[in-house]
Picture 1 (cartoon, rainbow, N blue to C red):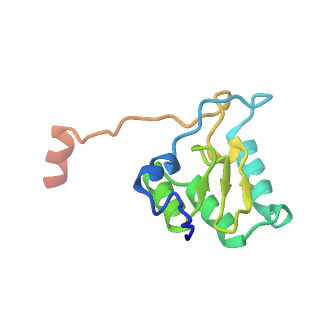
Picture 2: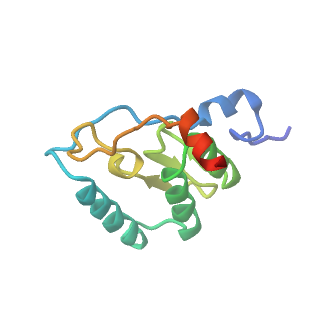
Length: 134
């Protein structure tokens, strides 16, 4: 009798568990600015060689962390990364190497001081459209 190895990629039933989701809301220890958050992220990504693992996987995880959910999912699938936590905070590659990402590289904290505003898309008014054609 033989043994068959299964993975989240060759069993449609298990693929559901490897779906990326947005991290839950969280707070940093102290209120921080967007610039401080960017600095923390840059320090983390600059130091990944110290953490071990494959550089290609770290690069894929960075691209996924900085992308919207559908693109992040495509990156995770393409690189055959297994998610322990669906928010990508703990993952494994095909060699069973563990990768851990801090929440501050995955999302912004609730206590971010200068959170960018989410302005609704402004549609041109009738007057704007008339001026363009004049």
